[in-house]
Image 1 (spheres, rainbow, N blue to C red):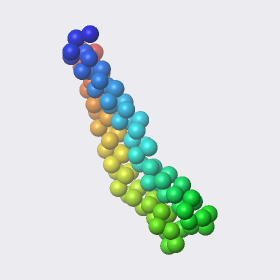
Image 2 (cartoon, rainbow, N blue to C red):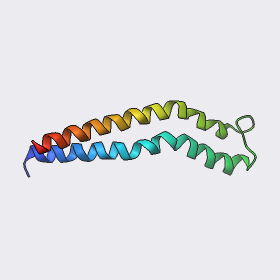
Image 3 (cartoon, rainbow, N blue to C red):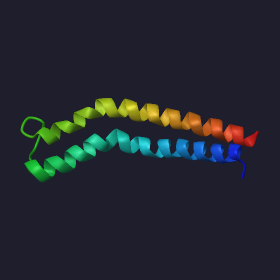
Length: 86
């Protein structure tokens, strides 16, 4: 395998990985907040009585970041597959 096709393979892999990890990035504050508030504050925790329960508000930042990561990964994947086919 020459250097150009190896590079194309890694960029395709990187694009696919970015597309697969972007949903996890988007919901990670919710998952962390839900688990930590349940563990440290009890089952009746909310934003007013538990700091960990306010963590899902960071999804206003992580959802657009994950969308940008997904689009970037898609563009990298499409470009690398297009270059591989030509």
